[in-house]
Length: 210
Image (cartoon, rainbow, N blue to C red; front, side, top):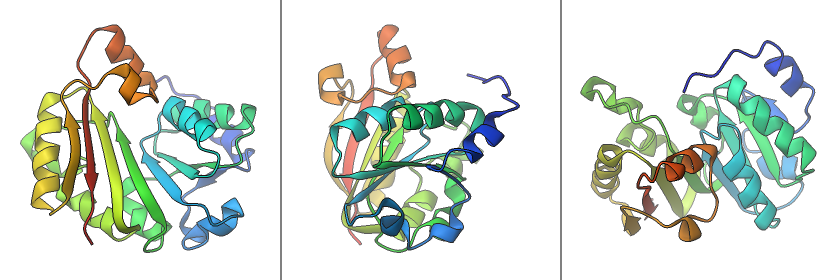
């Protein structure tokens, strides 16, 4: 889904003290930014922020960072973060390619990948956020035994991701080819759209072994 260009998206987000651009200056300082020693969970590809906001509301003792490269989408999330006065959420405008320049080793305790681009063409598979190329990046910023949770509407991406995780010596804790809404609990805007069309939602929960 192509989003209409929002001319004021970047200036608006720059006025929000909870939104960061690039983030490299914060490497190793994220707990200081949150002002506590709580665990930090990272959602990569937060879109308009529905998942991020709801999970943060229910878990005030966990810090959440929503990373998104698309400013047109994330300006909506930025507004929600501000309106809900969530002190345990920060937004980050950055590319997942640069994670190791943004986070120190063992800064992140959990990673969420919600409805990432499936990149169906073989030559583009390395762009998948569940691909080994990204798993190696995650391994350099997570704590040992950190959890990764993935949700997608794309069966091929789901099946490929199970394979990627197993080949990376991750433990598959749970996988579901049609996770219920009750079990899924926190619903992104994309998940809501797909559920309204009665499409299956594929889910994987896996654990890293550093």
